Length: 272
Image 1: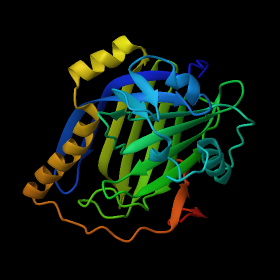
Image 2: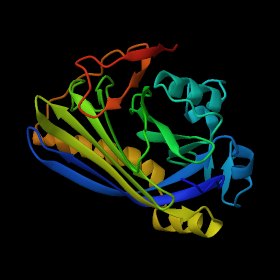
Image 3: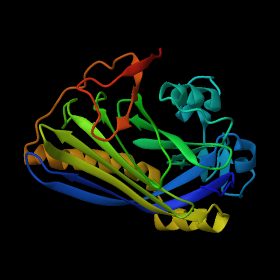
Image 4: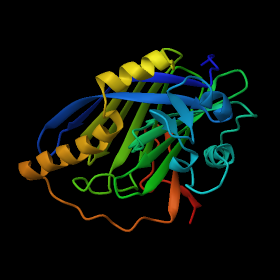
């Protein structure tokens, strides 16, 4: 990853495929922002239709990420990377996430890309949120290469129609032009669910933001609506409902190279 612009867009789609105990599949378009967390002031001035911590058609707010408190985003992210054994040596950290749109934001997953000073990806944080206001981070080192695979035990409640068991397998490809993420859930030797993100990079111009607003006028709200709509479909199909468990105070899990995940993944950070 060599491009160092403060802000850009990703346009693409997400696919979810449930395999057990019945098949259920859906596909939605999506739009993401890709922001350098050390250059938020530059991103704020990047184009007329995007702002940082100010009202606009699209925006970004620090409090939507990290510890949701006053901790500097870089300090928080470096702390997570250190748990995964990743030293960025002061390199940039880029956050790929859903923008605020029409004063609303929900990001089921956000990707924190940790790079060294030369622009090589050294680590990734998968910041996962559920619709109950809870969050968890899966952190992983990314050895040299363009395709990164790692696994972690599932420890966070995401959907009431899946219990908190099994393991995730992550496959990531990321370049200046393309983003491809596959997350599969494995349980008892079978794949129970797969979620993908496939997207292409675009310049973060007012023209492209306006096109996004016109073609997907409720893009961010639609994420939450889509989650609840698909949940209703699963319920009507007879999917078993699992009550939300109390969240563990441990909020970070370390993902390991594929096929080395243990029965109980390391959980290293306790946060309030």
